[in-house]
Image (cartoon, rainbow, N blue to C red):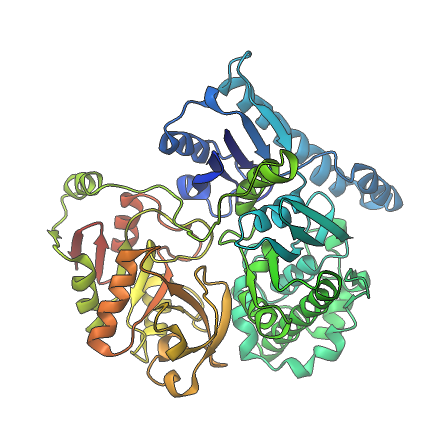
Length: 561
């Protein structure tokens, strides 16, 4: 059976191909259009999925879409009618945009499939695609499930239980009572782009003092005994689909917002710290409800808020579960995968056979294809007999490199296929990469990749973290030898790397460890701020020559400046 999963309704549009229960390929449209977080229909991603899968469109049995446009429609209309003076932006957001999204999808269906060979099309609720879809590709047969994001069709959070082939929803929190939207509003307050830059807010939080505003922040959001979110909407205007998400009351209590690209003031950092702490507290309360109701030993975390790895780290340590599972593409980009597996297991009741423990499900380029571009651009390069060892030698000397190897990762985190790598032992390395390579805010931290065998020696964590979605502490005695990946609060967003999953990247880290005694690599995504991660060799070459990178390890080829 062949299933094509699609996310085309929300940001981070994507496609995934599943054949006989196995995830063959999953791709994000932004990698091809170079428009970060794109909402464009994923026609390039779909085309590439079919090419890699070696199939024609007419062979597809089912198309699973991560939206059910008619879901909660009556609740939406009722909400809009209560506020007729705000109806115009509602009509634009829910009706006009939705109409054009559906028209584009129908055109793709008509253009792609012959009339007598059209696949069955299933529209899967957005939060079910997040929650159930993540559970069905997890390694667990029994787990509590928590999905939190800004909003789907109308839900903003979903709590339930997964067992075998079925998931059960306990309750949903409905718009405008959205923890994700509150955090987006704080992101805007801190001078970042809401719905895209929440990671910057999370990184800013450790620079602030949460105690200055936490009592006021706790008045803004609360969690009921059933685990539902309640927001005091007098602080916000996001519920009216306006250009600004915070109301004047928010500014009266928490101070003036930071202008875009403006100077950071202490209260911006303190507000970020307070609302990061509030997010963690709310998630822990919701997890406690799930623990009581399910008695499960494992927790699934899904939705865009699941990319908040600091929150995930606290849930891992404090919620009472043995481990947590978060899909590498936890946001809307992963709902193409989630919709496909929800259809297979929840709707069609087919047995579970696949575990999504390998994020390298994208496309790849051969050495022949890479060398064709190198020659086309008349570049000076050499072919390496051992690219991992040669790269490790350069890292040992303090060089910063682009690392472009194998199949592309799915999700926003670079995990050793499309990465910028460096030696974390150099104290000035973080500032150097932020200023000369990434061109981004100086405070922002970088993540470490460690071999799974050595991770516990350097980091305070007892489980694997293959997708860089669980923040832990760098052991105190190790912080001074890895200053470039240790954040101001002693934390790190760790990735553990197994040789079975990515042997070449594991070898690179091991080779650096043999030379320095520290099998840890500084790892950040192969892009500059505002651009998607590099997809093609051309993207990698362009990024290399437009930044302060010292070398590029691309396939088996090495280019140095």
